[in-house]
Length: 257
Image (cartoon, rainbow, N blue to C red; front, top):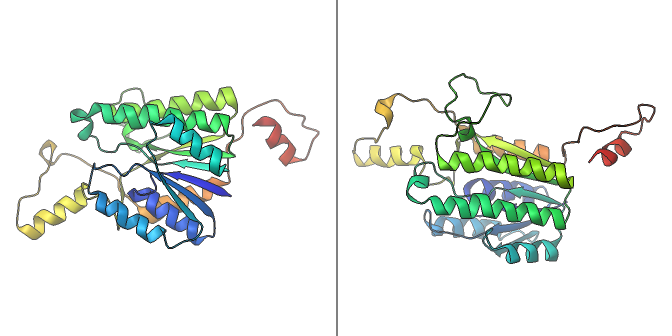
């Protein structure tokens, strides 16, 4: 497998790329190295990945369609894992354009590239934020997600709809993963557990929203990486008509994609 990972210099992208490289897989990393948080941290992650001969990095922005197509044409990835996105819920209030550029236009360019340079599987990061105003817990993939409460959540819901339509129209096997607040080493410095720690060490009050009346699920980075890895070679199969007398499952899968 030759796997293209977008957002490879990001928190999840870095850990996933490291895991894949340790497995001996070839990884093509893409990142625009923006300054949403300290680019120095992103460069440090890339320095670690650069020790592997089976890693190639291309600085590129997903909103630049020509750059993305060039990378797909040059490296011909067999699988794509799209983790690049403008993160942060509160940041979307101040900088909505960043979310449109990365999460909508950028994701559209990935879908188009997968259409013209076919891949065996496209996995992409959605978010628990799509559950929006849902009050029933635990959440379920069967829940309605029609009431996003932030632009970030709306773009992630849009990603799911875009991927669904491209999968239906062009037979692209796609899997969306709704991550729940991923944490761990090399994490984003804007995350609550980092800001809480900084304030505690400095003797400052911790900034808490909604009068402390909130709950949040966290997922450790190693669990996220393991889950993504297990799904790479398990593309979804379309529902279609098939001959029940055939017992060659591989032929059925190929016909139904």
